[in-house]
Image 1 (cartoon, rainbow, N blue to C red):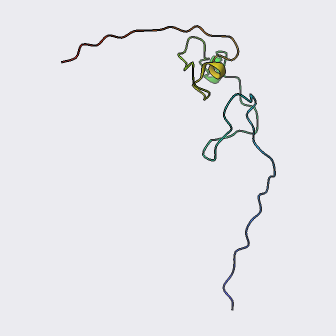
Image 2: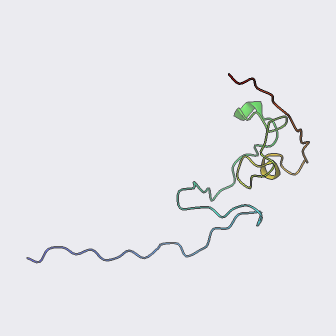
Image 3: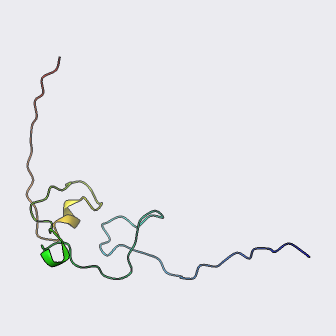
Length: 89
């Protein structure tokens, strides 16, 4: 008896994942990607336990999920500059 051999499996799906907004980064191999739409997270929905994103802090320079463009859902955002002075020993 010859030992069993493995046949390389071809990819079952032949499509390229792209972000909905071309300004956002392309999903990486370790990113979780959903193929079906999820409930909206922008507006508060107590029934689903979604707090919404209004009033949350975001990163003005990030293109990731913490970025203001994505987190603010197109509503626009206000930036604040804070100067923190700390006493050193």
